[in-house]
Amino acid sequence: MEAAEGKCDQRLRMQLTNELQNDYRQWKAVYEYGHYDPFWADGSNLFLIRNHIIADKKAIRENLKPEDYPEEYAWDLPQEVPSEYMERPDEIMTRAGKALKAAKESQDYRWMKNHLYDERFSPSVRKKAAGIFARILAYENAIRQHDLVTMRRFGQDGFVSGELADARAGFLAEQSRGRTFPEGQLSIFDYL
Image 1 (cartoon, rainbow, N blue to C red):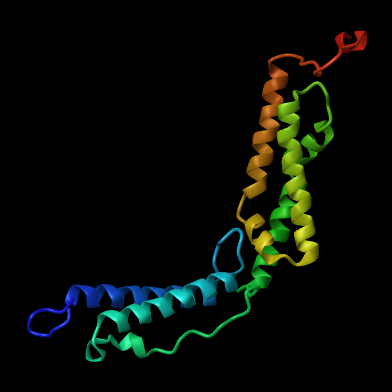
Image 2: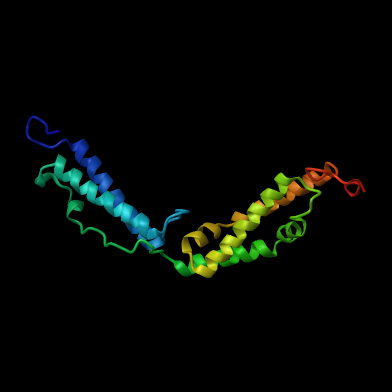
């Protein structure tokens, strides 16, 4: 890895320095602004990035002479934070609450709520709608339980409202093709 004159490989030094700088920059951004990981809290992501910084410093020690270490090598290791740490929790709660309210006040939600168990529609269309309603219930529970990761996932603009509109369109498309019949044994009343 060293040139014949005893100098370090500048490309390797630059690569290791860039990786270390990027990881410090990423840690700071997640710590200050949060992350948008749909399944993990910011604290878990910060832990992972912190471990990358530790690995970056180890790679520098293993591949460079001390006199060739970049100045970033001497930077303090970022603090450890609890795994459940979330940046901007108030903003997450506000966005999730607004998104839930908008979804439940939408015409699509009210229309589908009235037709969810309407057996004139196919089971596949009703199943899709039921899945959306189950997720809305899960988000209500997340708000009650202060589950910021789930709230952040729900708080994305139009996340559920778009799905409600698509599901309603599925109902209406089926309705425009003509009357459907429930699966299974039919009775005389199904034809009336």
